[in-house]
Image (cartoon, rainbow, N blue to C red; front, side, top):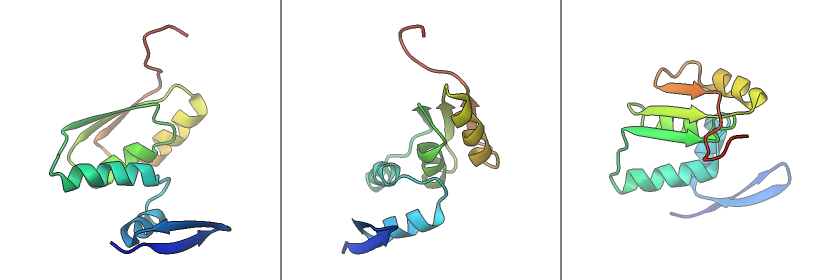
Length: 108
């Protein structure tokens, strides 16, 4: 696929047209999320559940829900400010559960 140059506030990126569309239409979107999920879909991998550890404000969670609307997503985020925004961003998506916790093998 041919790449196009896009300038976003003086930052120039080489993107394919689908990535440009994703950036312009998906709130709080991440190109890394788009590329990872697009690769899964191209390989006909259809997950039933995704666990987003360190979900932040929902970039990967939202992208996952857009790519695979029927899957269940569990999003974990310990920072209260990020949890507030995460919940706001996913409030209309019924297949997402937000957990205001950290996951790890050590306490603290």
